[in-house]
Image 1: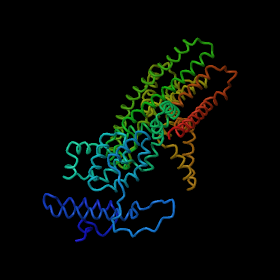
Image 2: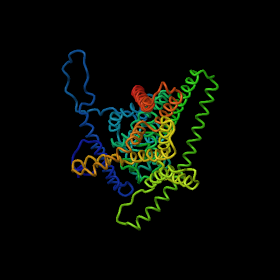
Image 3: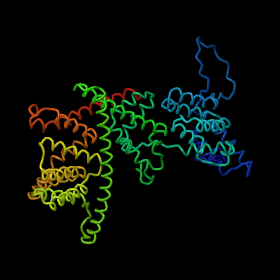
Image 4: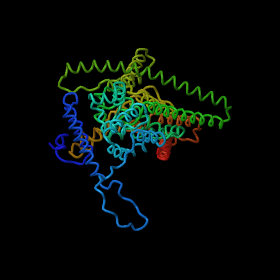
Length: 544
């Protein structure tokens, strides 16, 4: 039997890795306890194949020597085996890897992988066993080792195949520690579509890993909205059961697949919180400066700004609690309506009815309020209809509700005060437009308008056009706030609101009042775009 047949190869080869892999597979069925002679023959065949393969890879050995003068005719060469290439002891290889990681970072250590693999392939069998133990200790004890290196060592030394030889070589305590280290390994996620969802988070993570904490805070402050949206999505996925996560992360720890350690996860959160604190301090400084320009003392300015923030926080918390109770009531209402629809009209598709019922109740309240409100029954009836309609038509998120409230307050201000029926109908108009945009209904109307025009169905096209025109203004507000961000849109509305109060009517006619809010939104959009560009520049400049 040839050596390559004894080892388990299909044919002669000089591939060292293939020889080792075949030897490892054959060794599972050839134990020294069962058949010592077969084991010895297998071991000798493996050594001969490994030696021949190394000679094929390095045929010249160390025979290449540079001479400074013409050489004299050499005597006939003796029949001597060519010298095998020298190899580096495993302990020196491990020390070199650890020093590279600690002094030059993960990227430099990963760049060592091709040369490290070549050096490991040059080791004789006894040194291979020592290298397996040495590199296992590095994988267990040094947390900074990149995942790619540990995965390469796992495949090279066969750590994933736990058999009696590996346990006898390493010992049970080291083997158990290595198993725990390997269980924490996470192959990096490579799906481009999945990685694109967290590109801003990964960019901030690279800045943090560079060690410049101040610039990480600046990037977190300037790119807050975009990074926080991706961070919220990541936190949501982390709380999901594994079977509900995207297929790209199947069988992996999500943070490890993105290359984010538990320590870095906490530091990214701290960078976002610190960036938001920097934004709050900048805003407070702007408020103080504005108050000082008006001639107010600085202590009064700080007290006013802090009081405004405190009242705003209390208002948001109160609105959030009211919104939670309203959403629970709306959910029970939708459940009851759906059950009635299933019983009465089982053939029709089920739809969410609470929002539409709320809008209709608001319209009914507006019409009822147009009557003489001195009548108690009419007054309380219209108020009850308006309250119930608002509860059923409330937006899904607190930010969306605050934006709608801010727009209503601004419309009331520039109109000089609206009567109660008009205000109730305005509430219905704004809430309807916001929901139609957020749910995609407005875009479906536009698609219907285009398709019916092509099909020459004028009545349906006119109906879609009329519906889209009626809610065009609140839909535009909802679109702008969605693109701009709810918080920034609220600040722009607050600035426009304060400018309306401060400027005399002679300096700001009705046309200027109508254009003041779009101008503030445009200024906020430009400021955010400028901050985003600055954040991109900082991340690209210091992330490397």
